[in-house]
Image 1 (cartoon, rainbow, N blue to C red):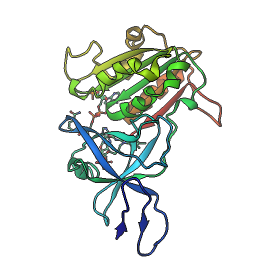
Image 2: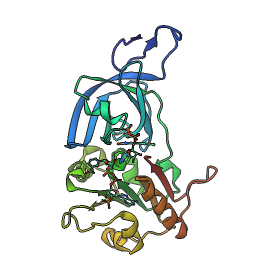
Image 3: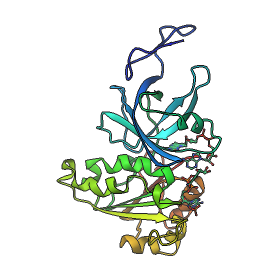
Amino acid sequence: MNTITEPGLELFREGGDAGQKDKWTAERVLSLRWWTPTLVSFRTTRYRGFRFTPGHYTRLGLGADDSIVWRPFSLASAAYDDFLEFIAVLVPGGAFSEPLRQLRVGDTIRVDKASYGFLTVDQLAPGKDLWLLASGTGLGPFLSILHDPAVWQHYERLIVAHSVRHSSELAWRDEIAGIPKGELFAEAKATLIYLPVVTREPGATALAERIPLLLADGRLEDAAASPLKVATSRVLVCGNPEMTRDLRKMLAARGFATNRRGIPGQMAFEKYW
Ligand SMILES: Cc1cc2nc3c(=O)[nH]c(=O)nc-3n(C[C@H](O)[C@H](O)[C@H](O)COP(=O)(O)OP(=O)(O)OC[C@H]3O[C@@H](n4cnc5c(N)ncnc54)[C@H](O)[C@@H]3O)c2cc1C
Ligand SMILES: NC(=O)c1ccc[n+]([C@@H]2O[C@H](COP(=O)([O-])OP(=O)(O)OC[C@H]3O[C@@H](n4cnc5c(N)ncnc54)[C@H](OP(=O)(O)O)[C@@H]3O)[C@@H](O)[C@H]2O)c1
């Protein structure tokens, strides 16, 4: 049996590992936002010792004590927020998706105390344009990065392309547009270029094909009015594994490289399955 003192505080297990600190905390769900019946973003309380870099992921645990399902989830909230935020798609029959479907405000969710990953701007050499290319829930870590004022100081252009099947899945569209108006961004140097891509709803967006195709035929660069150049462009890609694989190949063919042995590169990737 677990003894839970208070959400966000450390937990101690009774039994075999009595007295040992757990690697996770129990947090409370503060709010849920259903974008569609299968796409939800939610906020939880934040353990005061939880640290992460925008772009990182952590692990979430749901289910009964004897059958907890853990899955990695990117942090969508800002590093300075006093809550954590996540976005999740419900996959039919998925072991995590099923308990997630039942999640309600006030419920407990386990959050790993550590954060992980390499989809961070510190993996990249200095540059002028930061391209954030996401499919589906892959937008989550980019929301966190976009809330980092330093990013708006270091780059001249922040180009966000978000590919989804239906326009209702363009999560945080208005919030993203509003970021530069926030008081933390008064000194921002960068311009935001937001490119929504809806692939299964003809006419919903000007760009309507998968991101690798849009990159291959030049339409992505045209829409951003910015050429992708090794010297000045930096690229982060997140989401569908086939998309990350295809974009990696295409960018490598144009001279882009990932961080190697501590030498910052021009691109970084995270695939979700
Ligand atoms: C580093 C990392 C970070 C991740 N961050 C997120 C996140 O922020 N939000 C999120 O929703 N998921 C994220 N995922 C995926 C997530 O961990 C789970 O796979 C997902 O929630 C489904 O879990 P499941 O147990 O229901 O199904 P699983 O058995 O894990 O997955 C079943 C199938 O569902 C599909 N699938 C899984 N995840 C997604 C997805 N995100 N979008 C579309 N199809 C998917 C794939 O076809 C997969 O084979 C991340 C994965 C990794 C590796
Ligand atoms: N989105 C929904 O309406 C919906 C509803 C119920 C359940 N689900 C479940 O959720 C999962 C899929 O979720 P999702 O729609 O967020 O993710 P997704 O299938 O990865 O699609 C998200 C976006 O990525 C694009 N994409 C897909 N494969 C690509 C590739 N190889 N290269 C480049 N782009 C690619 C899609 O374009 P295309 O449209 O061209 O594929 C879409 O624009 C599935 O398990 C599904 O069963 C989804």
